[in-house]
Image (tube, rainbow, N blue to C red; front, side, top):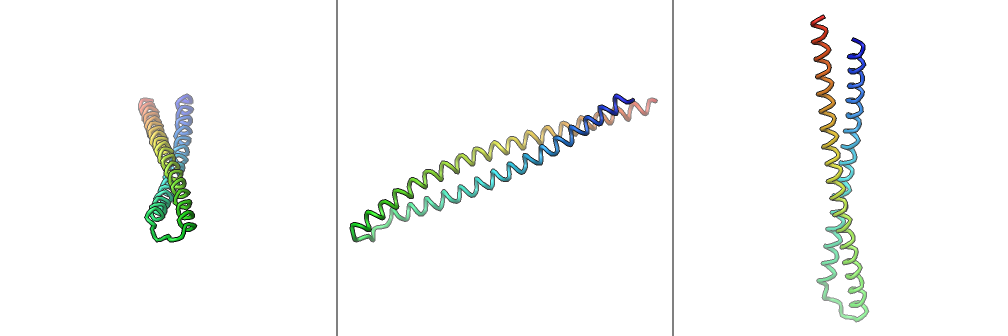
Amino acid sequence: MAPERKKLKRAQLIQRIRTVERMQSAVAASEAEANRMRLSGVAERTRSLAAHYARRDDDLVGADLRSGKAMQDQLQKLSELSERQAQEAELQSQARREDFAQSDLRLRKAEEGTRDLVRTIVAGLGKA
């Protein structure tokens, strides 16, 4: 009976490891999603500000026109950069969600394996 108990202890250890792995994956997925949302908000606000400067037509002095155009150009570049960062964050968030789903699946398989092993041990005890 000792080999079955060793198998059960090993199965329980694997289950605990999978539980920790799942929790870590959940935290990573949550952090990646929060980062994605934050960067998407920054990109949207930057886009809005760039659009505002693009619509400005009340500048009458040449210096104001030049500085407005420079601001518009910088905001456009910043908008493109923040959009790329938001897209990268989206990809990272998707990857973290996939990691979480895989770790959840591994945990369920470990739990099933432990339950099957317990049933086998209990059935063996019933025959003895």
